[in-house]
Length: 185
Image (cartoon, rainbow, N blue to C red; front, side, top):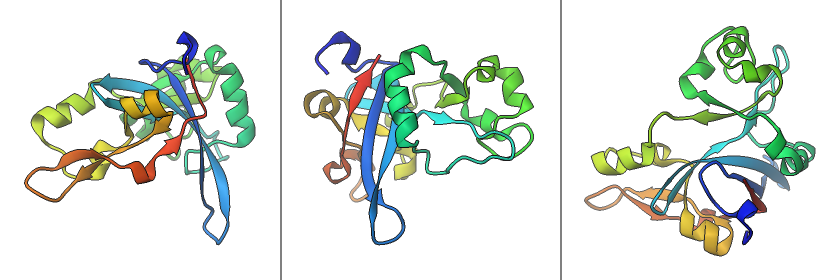
């Protein structure tokens, strides 16, 4: 992460392999690819890079990718079209959410050649939440990580909300930190 190609910046892709339970008594690896969509002070907001389902073929719902797709994205992410889609557009059109449909294809023509996308926001959500002090729960502050932890330790250390005391204040949650495999620009 010391070369320019692998330094954290707006638009970077972060690859993280995470180990978790698979619903039974065993563990499995989950593979995630994130796009850096906002940097504000120590706050880094990420959006998961996902693949839209095809009609009648629903992809898995945990937003992780397969190890094969993860490796292919690591090798080719600079060459792929990964479309920013407004969150509200994922609810429009025929079929279930996160499914490639005529509405999305018409509004985002790049999806014809590549079904990869990330949810995009038109505003800096982090700054707005902090200034207005409207943080009411962890989900308001989801997918926000520490820039310092990413750069210095190679970890995705999330901010969570301390809901005890007078103010709902974002705090680092080291116990949920995940290792970063790679950052690419």
